[in-house]
Length: 211
Image (cartoon, rainbow, N blue to C red):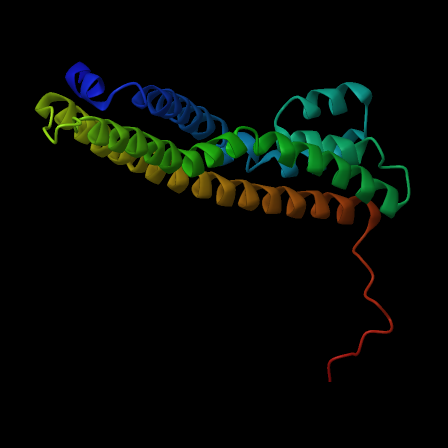
């Protein structure tokens, strides 16, 4: 492995750093973005049951907010359970945006690595081409060692750049789609809580009725 890095030249070091960061982010997001941890399947039922039995208390709300991202959204709604429906909904929306922002943490960095890695590989290719042209002596001769080194730099950096970009792009899109799905699940759960506390939503009277 060290021989490959040595053959690839100094342009490989930014790519190696990018690969280490990408692997660390993929592992971190894989552990963090687990559906059972973000949207516990029984949490809404527990909250509704507790609300119907004993109402809302600051201690319960604070504990709920620390339980999970979904708990944080539901806690924002419970803090405003005595307010009108639209106030409670606004509080939930504000908390939901903050939670969604936290869930998307590091995804921009992962997407940047997926985009920048081929460019870093191309930069290494250019450096290798410069080495190749530099192997030509003024008399028309060629330095074989410098020529081989230039070819190695060009090919290895191109390969490394593509090899890093492909998994980074796949996981970036996978995590982005996962976050979108989790946000939808939290919105649906929060909507059910609002309906339970304030009653089912009224249909628009001006909307055409089905015949």
